[in-house]
Length: 67
Image 1 (cartoon, rainbow, N blue to C red):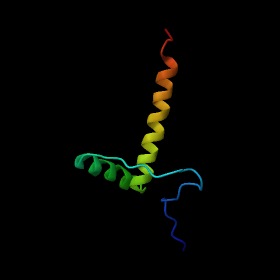
Image 2 (tube, helix red, strand yellow):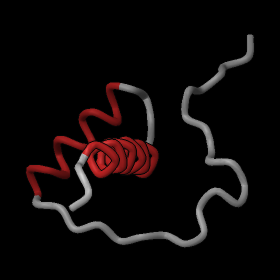
Image 3 (cartoon, rainbow, N blue to C red):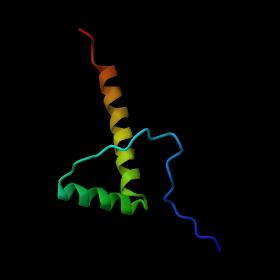
Image 4 (cartoon, one colour):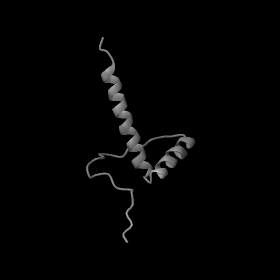
């Protein structure tokens, strides 16, 4: 029987360069816990959060009136 892992690689060309992120120790523990719960890598989970945050930020900008 073939064992299939949920952890996958990001598609080629998606990341142009790695980015360093500084987190407090308790934030690292929290991120690692959420990533493990989803059976994902820490890097995958951080990318997921950044993309989600960017989408929210863009929606917020689009809803603000222009002066």
